[in-house]
Length: 84
Image 1: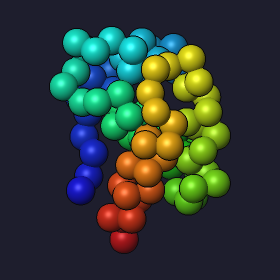
Image 2: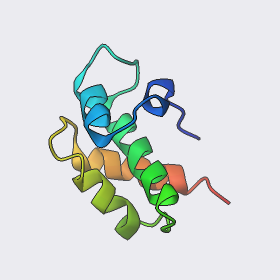
Image 3: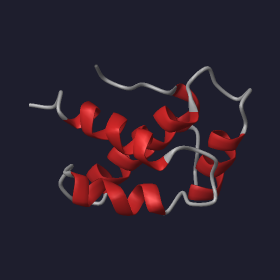
């Protein structure tokens, strides 16, 4: 499974990511899925690994968004488990 969210690729700031997560009509993806994808992508872009300890700070950065943190973390871990 590889998460692809077109609307997320258009976000230029973390504030826009929060808006996307909070706007239930912006995309068909659930808020946890958007948060998970953002966290994984952010960790990779920062040159970090993609382990739990690398993903958590990026999910925490989305604290003003409405999503279930633990569900998003679980989705992010599932996503990175598909990487070679």
